[in-house]
Length: 226
Image 1: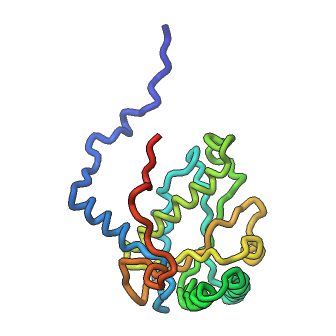
Image 2 (image 1 turned 60 degrees about the horizontal axis):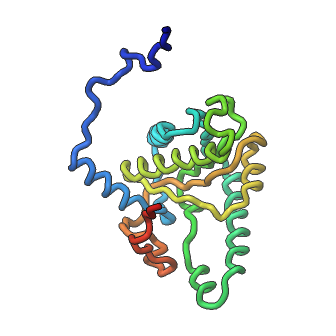
């Protein structure tokens, strides 16, 4: 009886994988705890080589079928940035109208983006028609393509924190407006608009907790058993 050859190439098998000890794990927990959604940035420039390093690290993320569908755009044009800010202001005003009373007043006081201060703007898209991966794993769940891009953003967020940078995710935007502003292919799905730079402040707790908008939820119930 014939057997199919092994799919694992012994030449590429790591004989001495890295060991992540308890000290490393404690530092990893600190990194998770100190990763913040930053809105208050210093205007100091960020070296381009550092930005490229962080994006390169982000592409180590898992992706469905190894499709690697993430597409990063560095938004550097003043005109395009201004259009993004204008759209944010419009969306923010629309969102404010959905609240009333004290909640509306509290929303109006929140700082929800660092668009004007952050030296680096990154728009992140998902190529929904990529041929890479040959559609493996996404025929029944095509949304796993965009999930893959979100995984890359999380790595970028943590890597930025580890390099002393802050990252803020601006979601109060119209996706169609962003696609038009940045003139991207029709098959690219808008995932995130990110502000990157050195933070003005350092906090372990989220700003929305300090602003009494939303407290952290209690631990019990997060892991359910069936």
